[in-house]
Image (cartoon, rainbow, N blue to C red):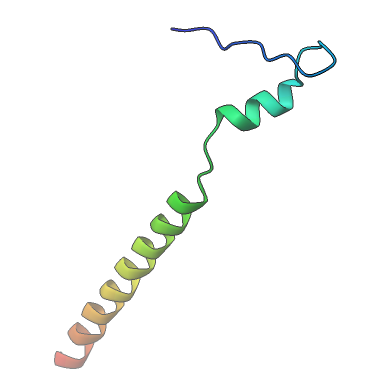
Length: 57
């Protein structure tokens, strides 16, 4: 595995670990929204099929 590079700021000091962590991890907001939409679709579909089952019996 490659080692993360140590970033140096204007004052010659290492950048804060918090900033490095934020840059290293991608935002997962889009992934979360996609999973919620897919889950909502599955729930609505399941409820529609269940309603059909109840109506026909």
